[in-house]
Length: 571
Image 1 (cartoon, rainbow, N blue to C red):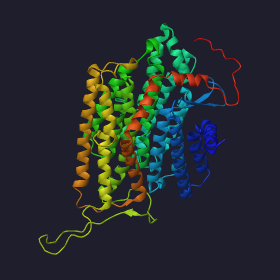
Image 2 (image 1 turned 135 degrees about the vertical axis):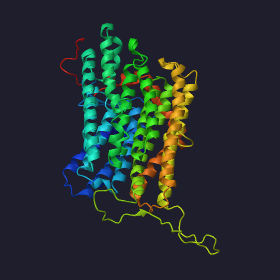
Image 3 (image 1 turned 180 degrees about the vertical axis):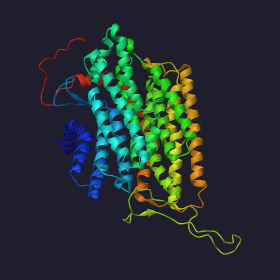
Image 4 (image 1 turned 90 degrees about the vertical axis):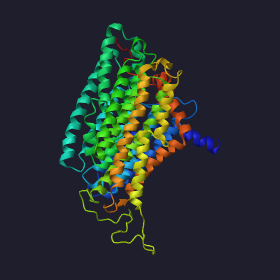
């Protein structure tokens, strides 16, 4: 056996267990940090950054594995119990994409927090890792009840992170955030219980097999259960009018926490997309395409609400929050059409908009600090000598500009101001969908799918009609409104700041912002491979037979294990 064949065999032997790593790694890191005293901040920071970096490497490995030729979903049977009786984790292209996105955002925000904000309160690092664990678990699980468990882990950690740094505004926004998420969790439980009562299972693949066989007399109850469950997901996705909580909560949080929360709305999008395609796709019989009009309508209204909110925002934190709402609305409206070409466009747009909104939340902290004459909002005294990206303007009062001697010394634009301005411009381009960055490519792909007469209507999707033209108008119109709002904010913060001191920007604060925007640039440069990946993901979502068959036929690693009784009574 050659070395390459041995390496391939070893990789194939380890990869089934590697699916657990995105969940176990943050869990173990959080447990270890809880054993350390709060004074060991540097060690906790190192553990947090190390776990995030290792998690990103694992996620990239899993994405490359999921994208291999003729790949089928990889199934991990926890406890060696076959589906639908045991806990099942599934890795496919969609879950791998979300894992890489989560790991990227987590590493960037943890690095940004390392400059100052991680010392603003206690237990920041363990809560951060538990948040990452909940996110990764939600993307990997193939069971509704375990999805609820990971949701609760994620939300419990987010409550503590939102209150990190204290302050009246954070406490008030945190109470509202907790209340609305508790209500969403209750709806989640009610909807899942109703589905279990109708079908006798909570395994997603098993549900996909059971729904076409539901008796007509129970069809209305099934749709009611799905509607209740969808309401819980749409609350988390911040769909109008259920989005009133997002802007106050995200803007009140500290900058790295608000940036990490940018991925949380995408959990609701992911759950809606995954379950809707599985349970109500073309093979769902009489329930096929159930809820599509609600997704389209709710998504379009949310797009308009987010764009108008951006236009009316006077604070950068609110502007970033409404940008997250606009992104969610765009994704849901496109998903509601139920056709592969449009789904591929939204899957390309999803990471681009998430990374840009995350970077905008981080920029908000730096720009607000600069706007307030460089005041340090961190609730502790800076004592370390971290490097700064700093340059000084030479004052021009009393200078004779007509003199022959050379009088202009120093830099006209300080390096820190140039970096903030260019980063803000890049965020504007991605969020509004202007060329040449990835936001434009994603919106162009969706517009192309809407204008393709053969694309819409395929796989049981809806014909474009007035809804398609309305979505096209909103894609263009909301981008224009967002451009006006972000341009106005840029003018206010960068063109009218001559009397302000030069901002002091730490390398640890600039590096994650640059990395997030470089990731958007990489998506643009590699638009061809990225779109092919998105199209393969969309095709698998719209034809879930491989997902269902792989999950239901997966065999335990240590031989078959079955319960005492494998028969299920019909409800």
